[in-house]
Length: 418
Image 1 (tube, rainbow, N blue to C red):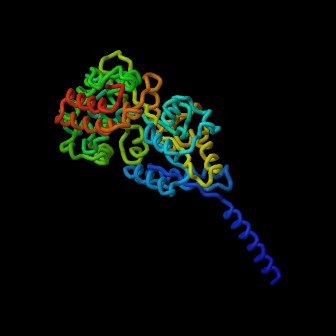
Image 2: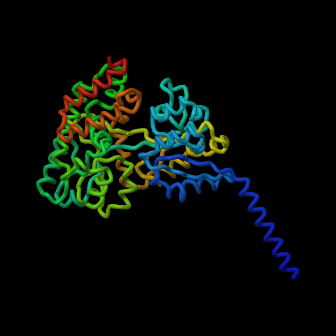
Image 3: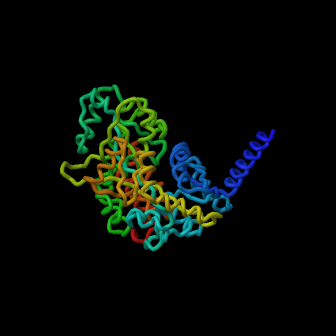
């Protein structure tokens, strides 16, 4: 009886200690649009943090991507947002910071691990304040079905002439749809299409910054020529591509029905689990052999602190960890295709991710041209660029007319273009 009583007291003591420790834990939450990453955060990333930070618990609470911006704004306005905010690049997050809803993280210890260019997507225009910790960039290019290429005797194209010759051969054979892309979701047309190939025409940062400072116009030759190349794509997309959605395009490729997928590197982890064929990737072919190559290496995702967080010290501890080399390696390999922006080198394990990031050695990097400054007015250039790209592919608007419309819209509110 004494033994049973002793065991009961011991159990009560242990349970009491455990309960006390749990009661003292602080739980902080993450807002994100990356709902597909839920299991990775829950199974890999958060446990790694919690293992070295006792007393802090983290919850990942994503919203569907298309609903994220509106949902986040509503939560912030209503005081219901989580402690940490996953930050989209440039103006969308800058606007939240300027409203006082994102904290100034300029002096956060981990910021020393990032170069100014990595922080630029989440800094004020003058660079004096930074409000999100850079997490990763994504790179555009083309993912292809290696089995299909081998079956049809195709080589990876290096120039645009070679690119269209490959598409012609795939089309003539008829076994595969040459490229899996639709125009129903207009963002797909400019993000996977115009921006993907366009940086080779406007020479990346040179052209992007020239539009911002007003020394180039969207009606100038590089910008129109990129549309002319894009206008050829319609002939190589599947029947009914005009009604084809983004998920439709993903399915067409991973089911093996299309040979080439105009891609963002964020597709890698999903495609790895869905496709049962070997995949490769090639960078956007240059218009002329021997030209310098340019890639869209877009600063894509960061993490900031809700200025109204009730747990600022615990949140800063997590953000410092997000800025650490440990997180850079963990995140880049858990989500292949999201490339760390840290100064610390990261060894990638996924071969397709290795191929994408290898282009940084050979090509000049740039970001999507409409994301910084140029989409702050009405009409919104980013939205209009998607519409124009879709129209050009469908042939309902000529490259020249699309460029003229975009230039007129930008000049209507943006002083350097007036």
